[in-house]
Image (cartoon, rainbow, N blue to C red; front, side, top):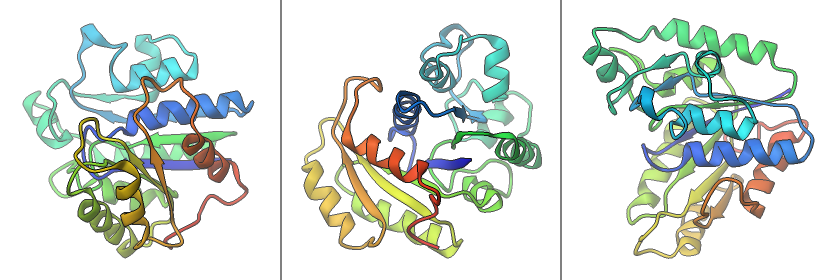
Amino acid sequence: MSALFITATGTGIGKTFVTAALIRECRRRGRVVEALKPVVSGFEDDDVASSDPGILLAALGLPVSRKALDLIAPWRFKAALAPDLAADREGRSLDFDAVLGFSQRAVAAASGVLLIEGIGGIMVPLDTGRTVLDWMSALRLPVLLVVGSYLGTISHSLSALEVLRQRSLGVTALIVNETPGSSVALDDTAAAIARFTRPIEVLALPFLADATEEHPTIGRVADLLCASDARSGIS
């Protein structure tokens, strides 16, 4: 079993797009693949297909049903806010231990490739005192970090990597996902980040119309994921 936690430097960077593309690449290779998006905010009941878990279910070739949603994304909140704030809007709270236990059981039960997509960036609060970083630290899975190519992303990316290093989390790769309209060239951004990240691979992903398109960057991440030991990079 190979498992990977997919996180980012912030929201709207492209975690779900990359996760869906990885799902499809693994399926093309004949691998058994499962995916989870345990916590999601900004979820609308009348637009399930375009939601993050809806996109993952479509990539998995599964129906977008209430039962399927409950299996991969049990904590869903309507407000497009950090989970702790979104939950509070509904008079609820997010049980960190329940999220962690759900994730750990999925890791233990997985027989093929398991992808767990986080929410927002690595320091997004989940409850009053814990963040996505605490979730990742407790799981101890290798991490795929997705960043944008916008002006300022170099600092954001290196800051995120430093935080992951401090928690001794292994980083399998860093994907620079092209930000539409960015004033900075994608390859220049990736090269600048890569100067500070060796031996972690920095992979540039040009803007793609949808996650069904094949691209060597996704293929390379799938190579790393399906290797006997995906725990490369920072440790």
